[in-house]
Every structure is written in structure tokens, then in C-alpha cells.
Image 1 (cartoon, rainbow, N blue to C red):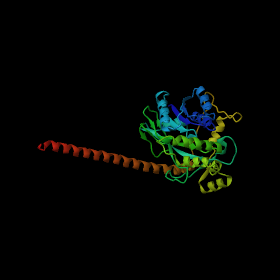
Image 2: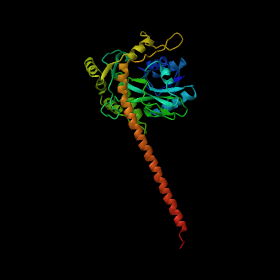
Image 3: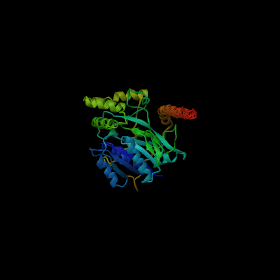
Image 4: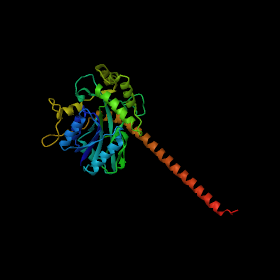
Length: 358
């Protein structure tokens, strides 16, 4: 089985090298990437993987962040030109962690009738360490993300999707869902999406400015809460304070571990240490004599904690499906009403033709 990763990146040089190397070692065979106006060295990193023959690089100069269109294009290319069986549509700050085995092992276990499987977002928070490599200072994970309807925080429970490759797929905004590839396997989240959204003051400032301005130029998209809050902090010169509000110091960590809202999670840090040269900071590529990453099956206690955290996604999924049924019913009623009105108009025309002319 061939697994492809799609990646849309803009100014993600601090994370994108690790992100690509990790997924290749986790079992992805190929990457289709789109670089959107990067200026920080991201382009050069992508070009290095392109020269190695494991990445196809597209360039997009648009300033209006047409994410759904650009990712859909990559997902279709993965199917039509790169022979993918499954496609993972990832952001640069996401690391898709299989719950056991490898990415092909997990996706290969999906029954044939299903075209979509979901991964659960798991948010990591920055620590006070000044290590320049994000994975060394981001080993604190949030265990109780908010319900997606909660507007008081940016850290929500959410799901991302992997899907069977198809030339007809349509990736929806945010990479949270797709259309055109068959049924979704619900209630099972065999992939954790380790999410490292806020990594440094400089990265958050760049994300605030570029992200908000890009999304706001797209008339079909309304900026999210985190775009608005970060951009306000940037405009008001509070970006350092804003970033600092997410940093977990030792005291906060001790409280969070005690009450179950935080956990120390070094899995990504440890995995990246095995494929990264600490002297140069560069990553190895999988190949003959270079073993890939393997992911052990979690212990029962971890499985239970994960199921508890992911349970809110099942609840949200039920709400979304109910809303979809209501929308479909409303659409059907509109059609019936239009049909009834059309029949009345036709009957009126027939009646007028039968009236005697004066």
C-alpha cells in the first residue's frame, strides 16, 4: 500500500524539516507539497526533499489562502499521478502518530467499504526552555481540550481526516473533512494528530500577521478565533504577552498533572532524536539499512485516557450529522414546495386555456 502526504506551507522553516522526515519514517511513501510565498527558508527545505525524489513541489503565489482548493489539487495529484492508495492532508505543525505499527498498518486495517478514517487532534503547549528546536521544549500535552463550540479558548477538540486516494476527492476547509471518497469510519480514531501550533514568539507573530491577512483576503472564509486574537495582539504590540499566556512553567505543569488537565508527553521528541543528527540538526531519510519508526501499542490506561478525550468528537459528530439531516430535509422541503408551486402554476395555465374568450 502507498501512503501519500499533502502539505501546504508558508514560512514553517522551524518545523517543516522534522515534519516531513517524521512522516517518511512513519510509513508515508511520498509528499506532495505546496509552498505559498515562503520567505524564511521553507522553500529551500522543500527543494531538498524534492531533489531526494520523495517530494513533489508546487508553488502558489496567491495571497488569499485558498487552502481547500490547493489541498484538493494536491490530494487529486497524489491519486492520479503518484499512485497513492491513501492520502493524509496535513498541516506543517501536525505529526500523524499511528496508535500502533505504522501509517500503512493503520490505514491498511480500514475495512474496504470505508473511504475516510479520522485522527484526533492532541495539542502541545510551549515550555519555558530556550532550546531552539521546538520538539525539545514542547513536551507538555493538553489532556482536556475544549468543546468545539467553546469560544473562550483556541485549544479545541477536533478531528482531521485521512482518505482513500481518488481523482474526485474534495478537501474541505481546514482539512477536517472530505467529500467524494465514500463512507466515513466513525467512532474510531486510530491516528493521533500531535499538534504544535504555537512554537515561539517569532513564529506566532509571523503566523498572526500572515495567517490573518491571507484568510481575510478570501471572501469565502471567516477568520477563526485564534486568527482574530493573535492578529489583535500583533497590531497592539502584545505578541510576546500573548505567546506567554500559553507557556506552561513548572508550577503550572505540576498543577495540571495533578488535576489531569496536562500530561508530560515526550513521544515526538524521542522519535525525532532517533532520526536527527544533533550536531547538524539535519534528518535522515528512510532507506536500506535505516530502520523506520515503529509505534508500540499503547497500554490499557493510555487507551482509556485517549478514548475519554476523543469521546467529545463522537458527540460532535452526532451533532454535525443531525445538522446535515436537517439541512437535507430543508432542502427537500424547498424542492417539494417549488414543485407544488409549479404544479399550481401549470394548473392555472390549463384553466385559463379552457375559459371562453371574450
